[in-house]
Structures are given as C-alpha cells and as structure tokens.
Image (cartoon, rainbow, N blue to C red):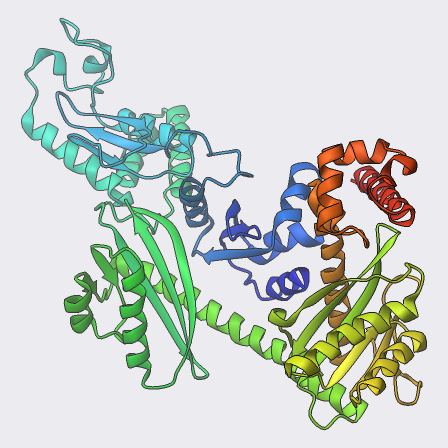
Length: 601
C-alpha cells in the first residue's frame, strides 16, 4: 500500500528545480537533497538501480515532500538550510558542526572582508554577515576579488610602516593611522552595496579594470579579470531567500481552483528558508473567510513570527490585531518574489492533490461500484477478506481485513490463532469464519456485504458451511493466485464459475490491493509473534499451556534455550506429552525460520 501511494505521488512531481525531503515511517526527515529537475531526481531513487547506503535509505522511505524553487542555486541554499534544520541521518556533506559559508564585513579597527561560519548568526558584534554562498570556494573567491578591487587591509598585525600593497594602490595605509576618511566611506558603501545584492557595483568596477588593462596592452591581466567576471555572473544568481534583515517571517502563498484552496507556507528564520507547510482547503463558504479561519487556527498551534507576507485575498488588518504579527502585502522586490514562489508551490500542491484525489476515487469508489455490478450486489459497502497461513511452517494463524467504500477500515481488522492441524485448510477456514461471525451475531456488530477468501472452491465451501449453519446469507468469492503469487482468478461462491477480469481494470487492481493487504496483515502478525522474545509470550502460542503450566515452565527452565535443550521426557513432568512435542516442534520451527530470514538478509 505504501509503495503504491509513493508510485502515485511520484507521477505528480513537477519538472522544476527544488529541494526534496525523504521521510521514514515516523515522519522523520532522513535525507534532504536538491535537484535541477525534481521529477527526474526523486524518481531515480525508486526506478533506478541503487546500491549501498542509498539502497538502505530507500528501503526506509515511506513518504517525501518537496519545495519548488526558481533556480538551482536557490535549491542548493534551501537544501543546506534544511539539512541544518533536520540533521538527517543519511546526509553526510554539510552535516558537521560548521555553519554555512558567509562573507563577513568588519569595519573596525580597519575594514576587511573574510569568509566566516557562525553557529549563531545573531552573534555578529559589529560585523555584517552576508550569504549563505553556494560553497566555501565561491565565498573565498569573491572575498579575494573584493580585496583585489578595493584597498582593504591585506596584511596581518599592524606594521610600523606601509608595505607594498600601499604602494601599488591596494591598501589605504591603515598602519599610518592617517587614512582618507572620504575614500574609506565610498569604498565601504560600494562593498556593502554589492554584498547586499547590487551586483552592478562590482561588475562595473571589474569592467573598468579590464578596460584599463586592455588599454595598456596587458591582455593577460585583462583575460584573468574577464574570467572572474564570468564566474561572478554565475555565482551571484539572486539568492531569493536572503533579505539580509534577520527578520523571522512566514510567507503564505495561496491558489484557488475547482472549489479548493491550495496553501503553501514558507518559514524563514535568520534569513534562511528552513521548511514549508502545505494544506488543501475545500471551500464551504467565501474563500476569503476560509483563509481567514485557517490562518487564525494555524497560528494557535504554531510559532508566530514577526512578519507574515500574504497576498491581497487575506484580511490582513483583522489578522494583525488578532495574531499580533505584522501582515505585509508586498507589491514588488525580493519579498514579492518570495511570495510568488510560495504561490507557485501552493498551485503545484493543489493541482497534485486534486489529481491524486481523482485517481483515488477511480481506484476506490469507482472500483467498488464496478465490483458490485460484476457480482450483482445491490449495495456493496463493506468487504471482509480472510487469509490463512502457517506460522513458521507448523501452526496456523489467520488475518481479516476490512474495506469500507473502497478503502481500508483498520479499526475492524482482526487476527486469529488457529487450533486445527497446520495442513487442514478447510477446517482452518471453518474455525475462523465461525469465530468471526458467531461473535458478530452475539454482539450485533456490522456484517459485511461481501466475504473474500484467499483460495479456491475448498475455502469457499468451508466459509459457506459456517454461514449456512448461522443462517447468514452473505455473498462469498474466492481469490486464487498463480505460481508467481499474483492475483489470477475470481471465483463466484454461488456458481463456482471463474469470472474473467481485465488485468488493467480498476476492479482487478482493487481486488489485488485487498488480497495484498490481508496477506501483509497476516504476515505481520507472524513476525510479531516471532519477535516477542520473552518466554511467557512464546508459551502463549502453544495450545494446552495455560497460566499454571506456563508459570511452572518459567520457574523450572527460566528461558527458551533451556526449554529447547530439555528432553520430551523431562518436559512431560509439567505438561502432557502431546503438548511437549508441540512445544518442541514450535521452537524448532521458530529457530529455523529465524535462520532462514537471517540468510536471506
């Protein structure tokens, strides 16, 4: 079921750049990645060949989420922010105790720039920090270029006299303590302007230098700076999540279509995009009212940031008073671009969810209705499906799953330990059916409209014998599997005829899903019994060992290994010979099953 849901979700991923987050059964993020094309990258994990650590990771994935960005650089920045936020166990790069690479401008005692990493960005003490940059190499290269273009202090310490940098015009002579304050002010304004996002300042300065070298026929230096200019054009792709004001803010993007509202909320903390939240609302009243109520409820359960960016559809004045946050409707600039990114994510989420719901209806409601027509059942609401199986090759257990209106109803799932011989499929089915429906009659609980048994005519007859004895008229069908353990035949319990099924039809996939679910449920019960390693829980599986005998066995032997090593003669001093043999057979089968599973792994 989980794998099928993943396959459906994989089809809906857009061909856009972004960051993806892999989650395990507990919803914990175990891996964060980025991609130029989310669809191709995420699908590659499940449809390509994976080995080693990646294969282990994929085996743990039960769900994934993603955030669409507007460039690959932006996807990278989102990725490193989320790695720091979630600390996923399968991420190795960027998982150490270092922070992201930033460029730091220090004004006193003399101006300089350097690459810095801070665990706590707020500890900046007269320092201005800009970034993060795509990688440390890019940050160092930019710092080197700034030092080359501006007369910042280059040397360490404070020499007694000016050095070569001063004489070639690459330092203002800070060691003389007689610096031209006007030049210093202009230089600082230009550097800070560039670091705050005005790329034109640095590019114009580079172009001027290149022209100077070209005019003086110094083509080697001109070529070198031209390469620097090309690199800057690549690296300084706008980092749209960076606003450089350290304001914690949420960005709420919405998209309205087909009677639904898609919502995407981006969380920005300390200038970093650390995550997002998606929601789909069905419009019951006015769309503005729906959003108003949703945002109110959302911030009763989540942290309230200083600023919330919203579109014009929100009642921002009312919400500002009630939530005590500054609601802003950006019209242009970086904030508007961030809001547009959230709206894009909301649109993609809404379209994916609507497509998923429509497909789910085809798989469930439509398939259930078609099955009812096929079997001539006027109202098919509830289906009970049974699977009988040998436990460790010795004892029998059974499972029952319930589907209501085409979807699993796990509240009514049941599991059974069966007392009959392991090879007696007929009586195993009779026992389980009798226990299930005799109790249902006594307790007056809901009965099914259809019973599906895992097997052919023999299992159908066993089920019908018990239903007739209980005066219950319930339709019964059998599902047989082929040699490859795949759903092959549907047998009508009234006529014993084999009903032909189109292998591509929703009905066939629906029945396969039911059969797989009851098989999964029963096998899980097997594993649970085997995993209960205590002597007490293992003895509970043996017919003829009640509380008194169990206590005596525990008192004498203490653990399972001692019981396994004991002779039948010794065991019969506490339990009957037949029970002793059953116990020994069970423990041997259990041990063999554990060895076989270990070899398979």
